[in-house]
Image (tube, rainbow, N blue to C red; front, side, top):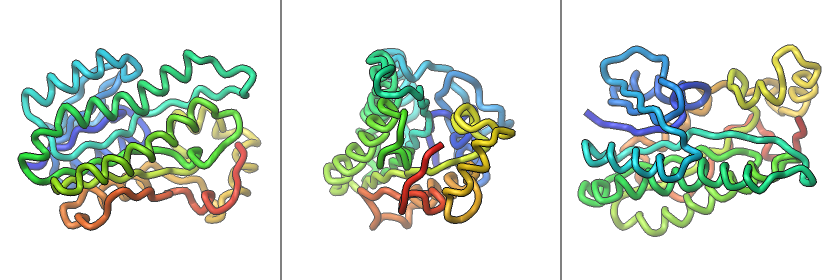
Length: 240
């Protein structure tokens, strides 16, 4: 049975991705602050604060020592919205740990197994905000950093049969992160919708489908790429 380790499986995109992998027959391990609410004998939840680099690294290596995985998906994220003048360097540190250091530890813990199997799939969930979005200094910078990780690792790991790709979601509803910025009943929602070419916000399942595409064993000729699952917002500009 194929095993996937993913972060952030307790809600939003991570939860939808966990559900999609379970439906596809995978064993799923979720690393997140909270338990994944899905019910399956093939699901395991491990509680860890992914902004704590040491705790995350310890959890990743302990899990890999038990049973390493060759499919890794880094979904966990946080925004910490602030204008530039109010941006706190502590927020930048926390998001660097969450978006970048957690990915590095997760991959390093399982890399030996991937190389031994001459197979691996790594998918990093970045954001359309990597192209720039007001009031997102720490978020945009660290999400853009994930694109650099994907491109760099793709070059290093291609000879070992490991692909590394990124997905950059646009506005995705039914997630805590989006609802915190654009509450469902807020006038901001209508304003945001006017800026989405397809006329709706995305759903977590839209992103999960893209993850499974990259994770497929037959997607072996695709690496180092960024797929914008954004309703067309990466073509222009968006403010919300």
